[in-house]
Image (cartoon, rainbow, N blue to C red; front, side, top):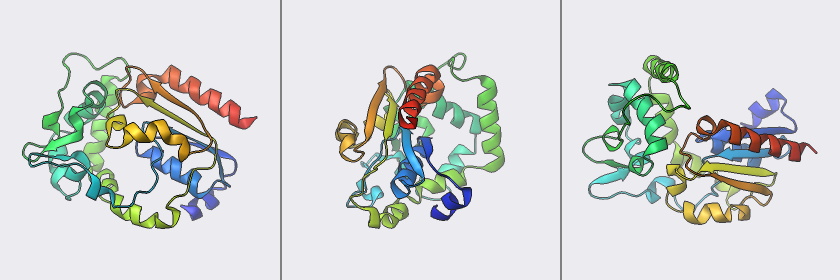
Length: 237
């Protein structure tokens, strides 16, 4: 990452990321505050490195496992998702917005999609059928292995972050999430989010969008854009 940042010539950039893009943004600002003057994370807050590998802390029971554990075994989730990419895309878009609790745990028998109740009728107003078709066709073409491999690398990433244990994001920051986002219900988030300023000392604001699910910038584009523009104006002064 260091070489890429230097090669691209970033300087005084503001980096913004959503979902897995948020940890990339947070850590880019953590690693290179000389290049990134500010950071905004959507959905996923900055999470300081813990004392144990992430997969060892993920919840599981005799009947179900945390969805990220379900993704660990190569080929298992791919086999399920590639059967019907459009259903998978619909489940991710609608399920993560309308039925946030169910997606967190996957039955040991039945698969991830069995946990998500898809609403009937037309897609919600913030997404079109054409969008769903486009994403589904791209995933059908490219497959799911690349994206799922990111989950399979979480323990390795944790190991590589050892030199930054205890480090804080030092640049101005903004955090935005929906109050129906399943991410804000992950284990430990009830303590992390209210105390995020301890790990991001220049956190300017935490914005929780009422009634909003996981897809913040799609579900609430006007509010998200307004917050980002206000933040950019502040850090550019």
